[in-house]
Image (cartoon, rainbow, N blue to C red; front, side):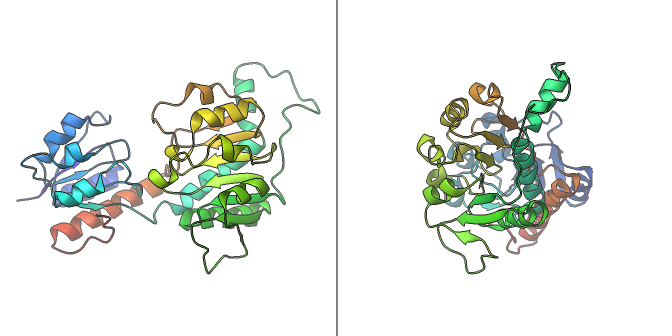
Amino acid sequence: MKPKILISRSWPDAVQQRLAMRYDVTLNETDTPLTIDQLKAAMTRYDAVCPTVSDKMPAEVLSTPDARVKIVANYGVGFEHIDLEAATAAGIVVTNTPDVLTDTTAELALLLMLMTSRRAGEGERELREGRWVGWRPTHLLGRSLAGKTLGLVGYGRIARATAQRAKAALGMEIAYYSRRRVADEDSATYHDSLESLAAISDVLSLHTPGGAETHHLIDAALLSRMKPSAILINTARGSVVNEAELAKALADGVIAGAGLDVYQGEPKVNPLLLAAPNTVLLPHLGSATLETRTAMGMRTADNLDAFFDGKPPRDRVA
């Protein structure tokens, strides 16, 4: 009998076809986030559940009585939406999909830097709304990134890929802050405090995991240390930024702009950010290429295959 698995959202066709060859697959035909009650019910009906970042799996779900699920194969690298301690206590394996979204997220970070520094979002809104009255010398003046300093908060795979592109394509200088200095800095300058990095950065780009240690890492105090001409980029986790304090800093001219792809209350976005003209706001598109989303699904399938073959999954996190 084929193991029964639940796919919580629509995945690329190639992945769903591969899974259907080996598993008894149930798809979420509505492609809407599953509720807590739906996930609790799924725990007793399936051998595996494959959630995404939009599916919250707290202890209430993972400790469901008479649960049948033995593996939660997450579609995505982040797993803050899954209570790992509760999963371990319930004897449930949890996996994720690292590595495959490095390049595409780095590309998006650069897109946000360029759009924000050149005020492209403001310009497009003006044009589409019929407010553009023609070219003029001082209209929507942005700032060049050539020779500017890109400060990276965190220096993992995505941060390094972002740095390489920013240096090669834009001629930026690279600095970083992380909990530990790395041996291979690739000509980047290390700062031993986030405050020091913020003070010298023209662009401050976030590449940290979510969780208690990084919750609201970027707040009013940190923003006040940045240059008035600086911009903030977040392709990491929405919870890293205190959005209300960021919105106030933008309104007060503490910093020049922000480019965001992630939000603490997704899919809801703080209305103060929506109202801020000096922002570029994208709907969590960091991994949104067909190639990457397919690779994420194939990596999930690899983890499922290993588990049901009695082997250790490559990407086990709990």
